[in-house]
Image (cartoon, rainbow, N blue to C red; front, side, top):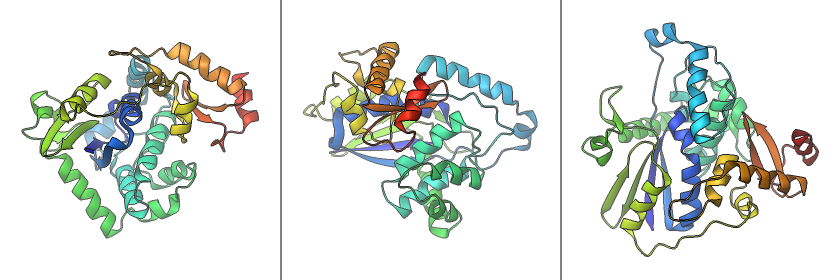
Length: 306
């Protein structure tokens, strides 16, 4: 078993754009990896300077580059103001305490909403609204506890741990930040640990970087190959996958190249045959197996294809 710690924040477009690589590592190594999530808390409050110079159009245009190069869905929805991220990070920690394991689904829901809707990660009611869309997540229980002592303490522990990156490979690779004082990990940073060995992948990295670190930790790891079709992927990830994630998961070879257009055609054929549903999301979609999909309905998915 290899322990993997992910340091991240729902507001970081680099972390969001790394999701295809993370899905590949999850699929490829499965239960040989034990994952832990640590929230960075990029901004506890928005400075007066940042608030006064905030330009909604410039912020949206910055996401165009991420959309073009990495393929995750972006709604390009201008937001009325800059937002802090602490409340959103606390929601993830609150979920972890309320229902251990659910923090991963809460993080994903907040990421998708942050980059495709007007969600502000420091607005409790908007956070609540985003989490209410996730089946099996108790949005009220999570948001109502954001200021509880145990949640605040656990969140502060996360922030402190994320700011212990001094002297690591991430710092030598210039993948850290001192934006609020201590040397902290940038999102997404992964730390792999096994039998006293600790390897750090700081900041955004390609799939091959994660793969080579894991191979150095344990040459005997079993590698699940990509499936021939998307169906097994949608079964494995019932909350749904974006087109870029599916394309990365289907890519094969020692240095795989994802074919997003071919992947989308295959997914559309799967929807037409009733095996999946497509929920429009930003410029892209979230694809789910029809057996797991409760929203949208099959009829709505068919209408989205028209």
